Every structure is written in structure tokens, then in C-alpha cells.
Length: 495
Image (tube, rainbow, N blue to C red; front, side, top):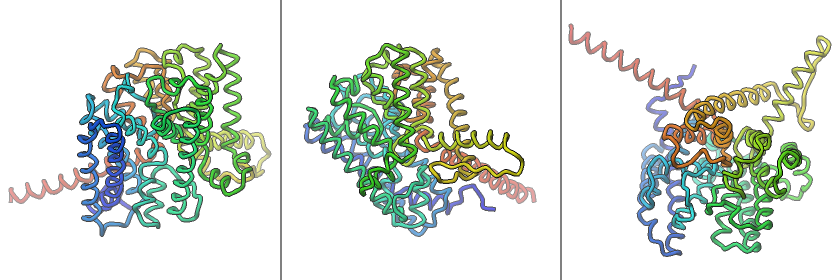
């Protein structure tokens, strides 16, 4: 049986691969200096120290521990968990050096951007320097694909190690047999859609800066805007429709996009997750229109924003909180479901929901079927294995457990149970729609809880739980070793 605690060799292996990601994060976080220089702000120069330090530290880890490259699955999980926190930490220091903000709020802001949660504690984002606005958008765009994924595609050689890091970030879809080629194609598709989004927004009359930022935050399903009124600032139905289109693109599996771009246009219509998403959008829109007196554009925009976990909005949080509770419950359910697996979205993912519903149907069918009859269940002709059904059921159970516990804590700090539930569901699903209970004045403990939820939501919980398990077992092992060595010393002193 393999030990689950971290040995010295495990730590060196982890630091070696983490070094690549630290260097990559540093390089990405240097880029906003271009915006700073273009607009003549000269404020981001102070913020260059953290990313340069990240590059140097990463380089040291890569070089010093280059012999330790036998990556195991537990290393991948640990690297992935730490990488997202490191990205948030470095960016938080940048923000502290360039604007007036506390570390906790800066860490919240940047982890929210990296994870695509899109929640903000800053009341007047339009007062921020252009470079900081671009920083937030860039983090969402990179985070949409995954902090680890981006850098293993560029810096790490193909092979088993790359695949383990790929899986550690809750991804298993493969466009090509080779992970490096899969990532290459994924990035190419992402770049094509990003260019398309920028082009469409410019045609709609937006400035180049706004077009770039809005595309970055939409195709990544991040939703953190450069405007106080979010997408509603533009008061333009064409902009709203382009945003809806990009949100759906971002919430559709990259495997489906690849097949579609290769010439098989019917693939997207045959995809069970895409079908589920479109049907859910149509049914939810009709139900909310029947329940509440809201403009159709407002309804469909927020329905799409919820199920794609983008969190973009065209009405203020106060107005969203005031609509019929039944309508908010529908939006909340969509936020819990999320979009397609293998896309940029958060939440539980459609394929898990479909698998879970199929497993319930199988259980009921088995109860009423004659003895010895073998009943199988399929999704689009493909058999579902028992392990897949167990995985979906287990994940949904764990997800809802964290949601329930976090909701109770948030209700205590906000004294607003219903809106606390809505915002908690939005946070753990990396959505970003809010009723207003998440703000700068929130209790620090509640902010830390929300940071934790954004983190585990983006990594799909399991890597974080494994990281904690490894940490606890490492501490227990270190304590036992310390205890034994202390006893030996005492015996030597006595004798």
C-alpha cells in the first residue's frame, strides 16, 4: 500500500512541476503593463515585482528539482490545488501595490477572476486603472481554460505527466489521443472564438478596449465586467445577443466545437449536453415569463448567464433580488446544473445531471423488473457504467453538502437566508450572479468562506479534498517521527 503522506521526494516532485506553472503565471501577469503604457497610467510598474518574483522562483524550482520528474496522481492533485491559490496570491499582491485595497479583498477579487466566478467586492470598478481592469479580464480568459492546462500545453513535455496534470484539473475529454495535441487544438478553438467575439463587438460599436475585455470575460464564462452596470452598461440589444451567443459557445464542449469546425456541423445538434442546455434555456425562459413581469431580453439573458455559469447581467443586483422568488429559484437551479463538461463552465455539469437521472431511472426500473433480468442504461446509445453512475451520484452529494453547510454560515452572517442561498450557489458554481449580499462590507470570515468555495468549485472539490487528506496524513506522519525521535533522545539522556 502506497503512503499518502508527502515524503521529501514527493515535495521535490511537486515543486518541480509547480515551478513551470509559477513561471507561466508570472509571464501572464506581466502582460497588463502593455495596457498601462498605452494609456500612460504608469501605475502597473510597481506591480511587476510579484510576477517577476514568481518567474524567478518557478525557474529555481524547475532547475533545482529537475531530476525529480516521476509524477504520480497525488502530485497532480496537489499541484493543481496550489497553483490556483498561487495565481490568486501573486495577482493580489499586484493589486495591493497598485490600488488601495486590503489583501483579503484583493485575494477575493483575483481568485474570483481566475476561477471565472465573476463576483466582485469593488463597488466602483470604473474608477480602477485600465491596466487593473485588463488584469481581471485576462485572469478570467486564462482561467477559463485552466491555469494548469495552459502551461502544461506550452511548458511540459507530452506523456504521462501531462495527462496526470490534465486530469488533476477535473478534465478528461480528449480531442486527440495525445494530451499535448488535445490542448493545442483546444487553445486554437479558444483563440478563434475570442477573435470572433472581439470582431463582433467592434461591429456592434464598442471600443477596442471594451471589445477585448468583454470577449475575454464572456467566452471564458467569467462575467466579471469592466463596467459597474456589467453588460447592462451598453443598453444595446445587439451587444446582449452577441454576449448570449458567446456564453453558449463557452459552455459547449471543446470536443463538440472541434468536430463541428472539422465540417461535421450536425455534431452540436446531436450532443446530449448541448440539447439539454438549449431545452433548459427555452423551458426556463417560458416559465419565468409566465411567473414574473420582466422584459423577455432580461429573462433570456439571465437564464443563459446562469446555466452557462457566466454571471454576466444587464440589471443591477438589487433589481435581480426583487424579482419573484420562484423565478430566482429557477435561475438558482440553472446555476447548480451548469453547462457542458469539457467547456469553460463551473457548477455540477450537465453530463453528471443526465447520468444521475439515468441512474435513478435504472434503480426504479430494476425494482419493478422481473428477477434475473439484466437492465442496462445508455446515453445516446453509449452504455453508462456503474462507476460513472457512482461518480456522478457521489459528486452531486458532496457538492450539495458543501452548498448546504456554506449556506447556513452565510445566512448567519447576512441575516438573509434566501439571498444567501442564491449567492452561495452562485459562488460554489463559479457563476457570479448576485442579489447583493456579497459586498465589501461582508464579514471577513464570510469572505474567506467564499474564497474557499470559489476554489473548490473550480477544481470540482475532489482535488482539494485529496490535498487536505494528504496534508493531514503528512502532519500525522511528521508527528509520529518527531515523537519517536524525542523518545530516543530521552532514553539516551537517561542512560
